[in-house]
Image 1 (tube, rainbow, N blue to C red):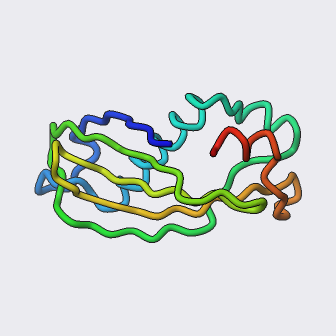
Image 2 (image 1 turned 120 degrees about the horizontal axis):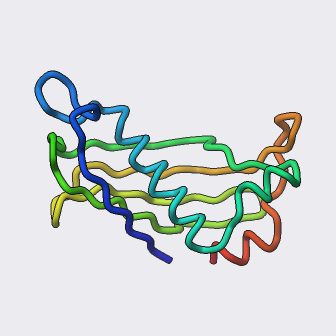
Length: 128
């Protein structure tokens, strides 16, 4: 399952040289994941009401080329693995055909007290 989310680079996303600040790629991929989750039908507000939220446990990131002010980018999100306890996604930030950034993100669920909990079965089914 793959999802694409367009992003335009704004001035606030860049450093003084007009290049996207490295930490903003994490914001870009978060927006892509949030849109992907919503699109497949997972209601994060309902999850929170049930005492469960998604949390990023691990990010492995690689930077290949800089994005610049006013670039049109595309965040692509693909499911890599779904287990009872975690969701692993691969996310890429592209400018046209050029790969700028890539990350593997491990997501888990946590309960109200911050303890790890299993991914709900209905959500695991939606993610396959």
